[in-house]
Structures are given as C-alpha cells and as structure tokens.
Amino acid sequence: MRRSLGSCVLSPAPASDAGRGREAPLTVHHLNQLLLACSLVLLVAVAAVRISSRSGLPSLLVYLGIGVLMGSDGIAHIHFDNAGLVQVIGYAALVVILAEGGLGTKWKEVRPALPSASVLATLGVAVSVGATAAGAHYLVGLEWRQALIVGAVVSSTDAAAVFSVLRRIPLPSRVTGTLEAESGFNDAPVVIMVVAFSQAGPIDHWYVLLGEILLELAIGAALGLAVGFLGSWGLRHVALPASGLYPIAVMAIAVTAYAAGALAHGSGFLAVYLASMVLGNAKLPHWPATRGFADGLGWIAQIGMFVLLGLLVTPHELGDDIVPALVIGLVLTMAARPLSVVLSLTPFRVPWQEQALMSWAGLRGAVPIILATIPMVSGVEGSRRIFNIVFVLVVVYTLVQGPTLPWLARKLRLGEEGEASDLGIESAPLERLRGHLLSVAIPEDSKMHGVEVGELRLPPGAAVTLVVRDGKSFVPSPTTVLRHGDELLVVATDPVRDQAERRLRAVTKGGKLADWLGTGQPDGGRPRR
Image (cartoon, rainbow, N blue to C red; front, side):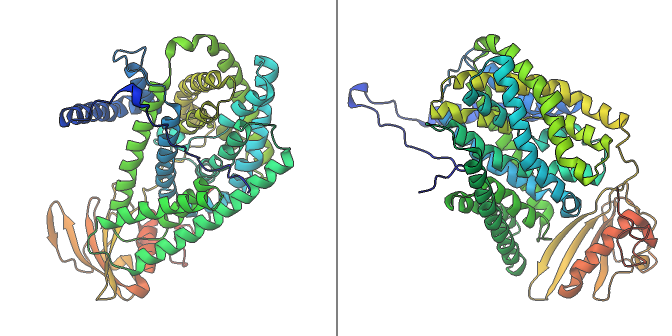
C-alpha cells in the first residue's frame, strides 16, 4: 500500500504498568489552576502583540519567548519534552492557521499570481532544499539525511509573519498575491519531503519522491476545491437559524477538507487552504463575523503552538548549535532563497525589485519549527540537534529580516500610497423574501464620501433603505450625501445581489465616476501593477 507522506500518523501512548501506581485524579482544584494559567498566558500573549506591532517584529517571537520563560531553564521550571504531543498540536494548529489564511486570501489578487506562485512553491522549494542541504553538508558537516531534513524544514515561508510586518505598507497586488499563494502552497510539498526524509531506510530516488509529491498534491487540490465549492453552495442556499452558526460551519468545512485529503492519501494542507480560499471568496452570509471568528481561532492556534514549541526548547543546549544555525541561515537567506526566486520568477518577467523583496521576505515562522519535530518523533539520529538548529535559525533571522522588510520595500519603491480600503459588506439572507440585506460600513479613506445616494447607480432591484450616522438612523433620499463612518442598509434581490456589491466596491475605490465602462476601475479598467 502506498504510504501517505502528507499526513500525520499517530500511535497511542503505552498504557502505564500496574507497578507504577495509580495516578492522582484530576480534581476541580487542578482544573481551576490550569484554567488560570492558560488565561494568564493568553492575556500576556495578547498584550505582547502591541509590543511586537510597535517594534516591527512578528509576534511569534514573543510567544516563543513566553514558552522559553515557562520552560525548564525559565522562571516556571516546567519540564516538557513530549515532541509527539507538540507535533500533533502543531498539525492541528497549522490546519487552523492555513484555514484562516485561505479565508483572507483575495482571489482577485491571487489569480494573476497563481502560475508564478505555483512554480515558486514547487520548483522554488526544490531549489531551496537542494542549495540549503548542500550548505548544511559541506559547510556544517551534517550527514546528507540530516542536511536534507534541515533544507526541507526551513524551505517553507510564513505569510503571517511577513504581513504582520508589512501591514502598514501597501504593496503591489502581484507581490502580495505571490507571497500569499506561495505560503499556502509550499507547506504541502515541504511536509511531504520532511516525512519522506525522516522515514527509516534508504531515501527514495528523486523521481519516485517527485511522483508521490505530485500525486498527493493533485489529490489534495481536487478534494480541497470540491469540498470548498460544495460547502459554499450549501451555505449560500441554506439559511441557518442563527448567525453564529455560519462561522462554525465554515471552519468545519475547512477542517473536513483537510481530513478528506489526508485520509485519501493526499495533501491535507493543500486541501484545507484551497477549500478555505474558495469559501473566502464565495460572498457567504455574515462574512465579517466569520472572518472575525476565524481570525480569533488563528491567534489562539498561534499562541498555543508557539508557547508549546518554546517549552520544548532547552536553552542551555543551544550553545553548540548557534554557529551552524547562523551558517545554514546565511546560505538560505543569501543564496538558496534568492536563487529559487530568480529561477522561478524570471520566466514570468517579474521586475528585479519585486524579486529582491520576495527574496528577503522569505520569513520562517510556525511551520519550520513544527516540522522539526517530525524527525524527533521518527527517531532520526541527531534529530534534537536539527530541532535546535531550526529554532535558532528561525529566531535569529526573523529578528534580522522582520524589522528591515518595511525599509527594503520603501527603498525599492514598492509601496503604493493612496489606495482606498476595501469596503466591509455583511450579507444576511432573506430566504422567504428571496433577497439579501447588505450592511455596508464606509471606511475613512473611501471615495464614497461625498457621493449622493442616487449617484451610487445601484441596479434595479437594489436600494439603500437606511443610513446610520453618528448613532442616529434615517431613511435617505436620492440626494442624501454619504459621509465617512456612515453605515448603510441595502436591500437587494437574489439576481442582483452580486452586481450591487460590485457596484458598491467600485464606488468606494473610484468615486461616483467609477464603473462607467462596466468595470470596477475608475481609470477604465487598467489593471493595477
């Protein structure tokens, strides 16, 4: 039977021997202590986000620090060495993080970048793994199996870390689309390679491994798209009795995609990302609430995962692995990543400025440290050293790359100023009336400010029925002038619902003159760079 390289295989822990005595029962008092500790950790982590946002550092470093401080060498002296538990929780957290990332991915930005991002996530990953492994073998002295594992582990990028640093700098859609799609796609082949390199016995020939990777990616992609489209169709045609059920249903569909992909011997990670991306662009009811729910779950997953990873680290054992980690990180940052970007993106005629930024924007975050637990669980010789090297590499190079990314973007003149924020629209289905109620919040930088209601030119079957301004609501007339901060209630029939939403988004970006030529661009439809 063909093995599944993209799934996590779990085995139950051995039962305790009778001679070891009975374990103390978990009492309500113990539960209260555990809840208090968890809540304090969450509160400290939430407060630390503000510190990381001001310093320009990804919050992952703060969460790792909390775990280290709680660990065996920290102030709490908690001894924790269960790599298997960390791997299981890390996989679960990664599913949630990928789902949240897919839900927030805008199809209009990713679609033009799909070919280049796909090449970067496959050919680029292979180039990066090979170059990094060669550096780890010849410069650090790791044997080839260990070198290949390190090369595969650190070849996955973390878009969450990148955009937590670049959130104040609007970038060209091609850059953001490529980075987002790459981060969602490259987890799958990297996981497959790490599992393959960590298995006992000789490593498969490259063409066998390539065939398995392509097959699992194809299965994962097919199931992810199928689950995503079926789930979005169901949510659009079935009105649930409570708005709070929609976020739960969306996340359940995303997790279903992962499970289906993994059980079918495909890539569950690719499946969950694609299914979530389909759901995120399907104009589902109560979408802002769903995004907020998924965002909160993503934060909890990151906090819990990084705190556990920090607990797993023993700082006094890192001393001998600092120099090897710096050398491997230098090879990865200055040679492997730029080489993979150049070879992957040059055929698509991507300007050198964008290639330079994407080369430096290859931040490592959650995935490499989680993947570093796979050889530990598999019993690979020297796996503890691999974990320590990856941990030091991620921390040091995130400290170096994170704060310098905004500066590099400005120097390369890739920041785009003056772009209006996307319009926040929440849709609630009116099933028996065969219509939709759209709740529209006008952001501060929207060009809808100063536009009269009649100048919105909504399609027949759609109308602005109520305006909420400064806490007071009123029924507008065609000459009512809209302002920043207004909230609109728009009623639209089923056939014109999407058309009404497209028109509203066009006006918020282009003002009253937008869409004269049937496009959403005020300049006549010229695409953004």
